Amino acid sequence: MKKITASILAAWLFAAPAAANDSTAETRAGGLVLTRTDAIDMASEDLFVSADEVRVRYVFRNRTAKDVRTTVAFPMPDDDLANREYGDVAFPHDFVTRVDGKPVRMAIERKAVLGNKDHTALLAALRVPLSEDASARLDRLGKADQERLLALGLATSDDQGAGVERHLAPAWTVKETYHWEQVFPAGRDLVVEHRYVPGTGGSVGTALAIPKFRRDAEGRAYIARYCADAAFLAGVDRLARAAGDASAALPERRIAYVLKTGANWRAPIGSFRLVIDKGAPENLVSFCADGVRKISPTQFEVRRKDWRPDRDLDVLIVVPRSAP
Image (cartoon, rainbow, N blue to C red; front, side, top):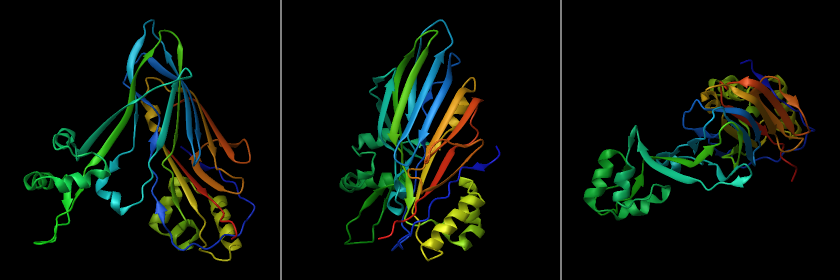
């Protein structure tokens, strides 16, 4: 895929300096997944992505003369509890799904996994919750059960020796999937709409304002991830100069969306439309796509026909910091 960046250079506002370069890691969510079937095609997908909301409207088409019942699933990003305390991670939330305009109640499957092994049953037997709130229960377990979980690598301990109370922390990964059973009527289309608040990452200041960062390996990889072209980087430079400091804190917002699940269908997506909304006219936005078209002061559109996605979507928004 040729990389083309959608960039809008803003009217320049003065930015206030930041006290620290705190950062939140974004997590990837994406489209609905159906149990593999050759009976159903994705006729169209209309996707809207912003830092505050993701909306997607699918039209599924049952090509056969019989109704098809299958599981529709929305896999959540993995939640690695072992690394929760070392990073600030934002997770998608507030899911709403409608089928032909009617709300759907989804079930939730949660698993505790370490490596390739499912330990959900063991933790359930010990009455240990799968979430990050598990520590309190782990600390109340008997010594034999604690040693078993430590030996399996499911927990870590800050045991500092005799006379110091042991504290255990969970070390498994939570895999969570929203799902429901859906009938796709014979020979007709079914509209499925899904919306949620994305796990938007952020930073009080973009490292792209620092020339040295752009030249090192990490910076080059960051630029490539968002297809940040010369015009976008020049916009960051102008904002930094307007603030009177080349390393001025220009807040970032980062959104990630899994598109490649759309390549798993029997046939390509018949009609695909993507709209990216950068939130405010003065914001800068960069993402990888061909044929980007500006359709409003804040929105950019991409259209495809008979398309199989070959990469996921990463969106970078840089926000001018208002004067105090």
